[in-house]
Structure formats: C-alpha cells, structure tokens
Length: 418
Image (cartoon, rainbow, N blue to C red; front, side, top):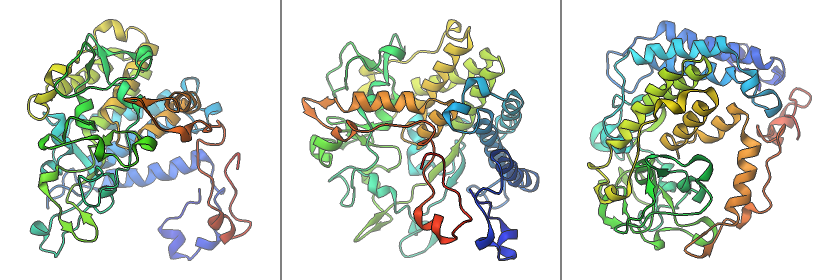
C-alpha cells in the first residue's frame, strides 16, 4: 500500500508516491508510530464526555496492531504459529494493561451492548458516533444510514436483509454440557424453534446475534420473525442479523425514501480488547490468565438470558472452561478462537482473525463445500458456493483496483497472484 500522510499532502506528492516504497515491517512501524503519538498526546478521557478518541482507545489500537503483526505478514505461507513474535505478543499484554486499568469494562448483559440506549457505555472503547435529531437539534439527526441494509426483510420498510448469518455459524453455537462441540458442531445442521426445546442446547449469544423464524426480532415479541422476513431464502437462507440494528419499536431518526437510526457502530469494544489480551497470553504460556478472561466473558453470556431472551431460557446452556482445557497451548488456542467467533460474530472480525492465524484456506474451502449442500427445512440454498475456492498466497488480500493501478502508470505494483 502507499503511505499517504500529512507530509505527502503538504508537499503535493500524492501522484509521486509508490505503493511498494515501504516493506511490510516499515509500514507497521509507520502505523504504530501514529498510534503511539495518539497514546502519548491524548487524555485518558476528554473533558467533554464520551465518544471521542482517548488514550485508552489508542492503547487498544496499539494492542491490536501488535497482535496482527505478531503472527506474520498475512499470507499463509508466512503466517501462523511458527512465525509468532513473542516480543510483539508482550506488547499486546502491555497495552491491554492500560485498558484493564481504565474505566472501561464488561456490560452486565450481552444484549445491552447492541442497543442504542447503551451507546458509549463502558463496553465501548471506540465507535463510529451517531445521534438522534432530538439530541443534536438537526432535522434528521446524524444517523446510521448504511446498517438499515441489514434490517430484516419486511420488518423495516427499507430493510434489505443483508449480512446473512450462515448455517455453519448457527451450528457453532451448539453446546454439550455447556461447552462448544468443536469438531462435532457441523456434523448435522440444526436450529432452535421457539417454544419447542430439544436435547440440543445453545450458547445464549446465538439468540442475541441471529434472528430466526419463530423468535422475537431483537427481543420484541410483537415483532416475531417468520420465513417471510428473509429476502429470497432459496438463495440466502432464513437467518437474519441482529447486532447492528435497533429494536423495531424504537423507530428511526429518519424515515423517508430511506431510513436511518441513531445507533453507534463499534470499532473496538472492551471484550474485543480482552480477547486480544487472552490470545497474547496463550502465546506467552500464561494459559491460566487467558482462561480467566475467557471464562469471565462466558459468565457474562450465562448471565444474559433473563433480561432479554427469557423466551429461550430452556434452550440455553453455557458453562465455564475447566482447567483441563487449558493444560496445553493447542487446546487453549481452540477455546480462544471459538470464543472470539461466538462473542464477536457478525461484527466483521472473522476474516481478519482467520488471516492472522493462517487458517483462511482450510476454513473457507471447507465452509464452501459444506454450505453449498445445506438446506433449511428442506429448502436448499447457497448454491453459489459450489464453485467457490480460496487460493492461498493470493486471496488473503484483494487486488489493487484497476483504476488505481493505472491512474499513475508505473508507480503501483499489483498484489501477489493477480
């Protein structure tokens, strides 16, 4: 990538800047340098309240940078466990120490995290800010315009049912004796039905994350989801995303030819930073400390049933990890990776997690093969996956767009494999 900063603009050098002038490590040094400046200069909490960048947000970003950097350069042949830089992992722990000692923390109920009533709560370290017209005295508010696309079909007049959860994702929430099923989770497809509990139990976070027919939409029983709330289910399935949209009864800050609402978008939340910390602790052989973090997150999930999803209480079961799961690093890694998938599902982290761990090709190609055969109540879908394939050494990164590549001929180099 090209490095374009204020000095490039000041000297009008945009059209003389190459995208291969800096190495991978040099680019990381530049990015980290910017965040270090922010960390050193920003107050821990601005005097005019929440929602602004601060020292803790910079620390969380620095931890995330070092975590990504610690695993390798992103291409699978040079990324993964054997490439881990423990000095960088220690930096993750050092910077998340700042987060741990700050005013931020876990919200008591998982469901509250994704309601606009809790914008800028103690869970929110850094978020894209929105507002309602009643708060900022504008005509329509400074609303979130894009996430309306993710609203359920026919639930919102402008909901287009984007960002569809997969069957594989739903299967991942299965539990046995309260713990993930790991290697057995996808041997059979399943989904809960409201009012019809079975022997199969589920991590409570499923009901906060995925909208499913027969269940209330975002906790409101007057807005129960049906199969009609999915756009072209024979292509995309019947599940709908929940986290990035508000409850239907809360209405819109703008309701016209399009819709918008006043709900922030998380960039980094406290639990995300703690999972970064747990990941680094595992690689530094501090497995019990990592288990304590992961179990605290699971305990919050266990406590997140009665307030919002009482209707699913008899279908939920989640337990804490016993110490036997954290006696070796490989098992501890599996627990951490599973926890990250369930805790941050539908929050746009998954691809980058898999790339960091060097697991994209094995995970995605296996997923394509399974999902192309899936059905929901006998209705097949996702046939577009039957010819899909992830090529390692290429698809870890997108190509440089044609228009950019030829805007300044000779200065930009195409990414590997394209």
